[in-house]
Length: 467
Image 1 (cartoon, rainbow, N blue to C red):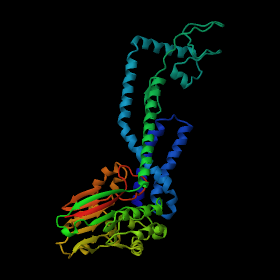
Image 2 (cartoon, rainbow, N blue to C red; image 1 turned 90 degrees about the vertical axis):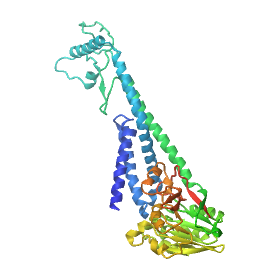
Image 3 (cartoon, rainbow, N blue to C red; image 1 turned 180 degrees about the vertical axis):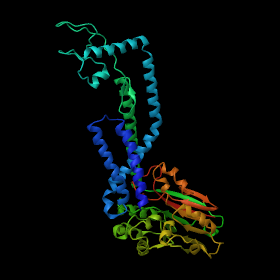
Image 4 (cartoon, one colour; image 1 turned 120 degrees about the horizontal axis):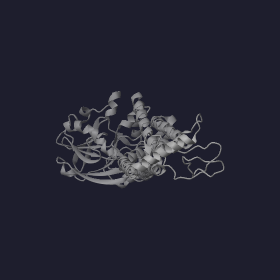
């Protein structure tokens, strides 16, 4: 737990610092506005890890909606700003080239004369011993003594008699100024262009992030997609061809879901008229006391040969562990398969249906036991294994499993996480193969963390076995 919290704090701190540089420091001058925005971003930075930690405990449930919403926005702001770094850098380089060309257009003699004139004016305009402000020095602006001179006029080196109007000469260009970030600008116009680039990038990232998150929320909270899949098993008894499984995973009952979430999933599963219902882990994110009422609609699941369940990693994260949920599901008519198998008799043939615990159970002595679930079986019969994580297929292949049904990945849930998952799991979503064992990975019907799904809509699968 300490390692998890430290990792979260480190990542959140780095991301928020990057957001501050790109969204606040680059777009606002020093002053009250920048200070206020900085404090707001700092507060959101504190909210993010509090939400991730508190959502696993009863005390933090009230943080779920604002906290997870900001985490999603934060993530996509970070992604959009990273993508914009290249065009932003190109625009700044182009601006620098424009600035250098503008400088080269001034003839050297004119530039030298203006520089000398600015120095002369500074010397003659300020009596000895009188302080000169930094603004006057930077602008090359003369300071008159005893009387005022209009700002749009410049005193030449000639003497001025009392009562005689000051001769006017062309303004002397300001010297190159230094910006707070260490760069320079040749004048207000170029400074405005740099500010325009920074603000445009920030606006594009903000609009992109909010649009993406808004669309992702609608997808995550909407109806799951029904995916119809046919899987051919070479050893399948022809009499079992056509046997249908309703596969659902990662329902994630928790502080952001209501009973309607479960009722909708049950209603959609029942409409499929499947022979077997397989609930492949990560059903809950809390205890029976907290979430028991949300699970009760599972009692209405309908199928010819029953509904079955295996644990996911999140069942082991709950305060009281998975056992209370195993007993709760038994009472709801859903049979847990804890390192065991059953026979599905259909049309005079038999299919072995097995289930193993999630790998996270190993820490508490309740991990997967493939020998117990699959050892000693008749290998002439086809076997379907329920295992929450696709990575478990490598062990399943050693026992000759024909098909493994898994979840866990959410299909990435929020692009571009789908590009990272292959570092840990052999299949991200859909049908794949591991060492000769076919693996079907459902994207899951719920969500974890932010109620957002981008590029990976929620899913319930109707899977049909074929010979």
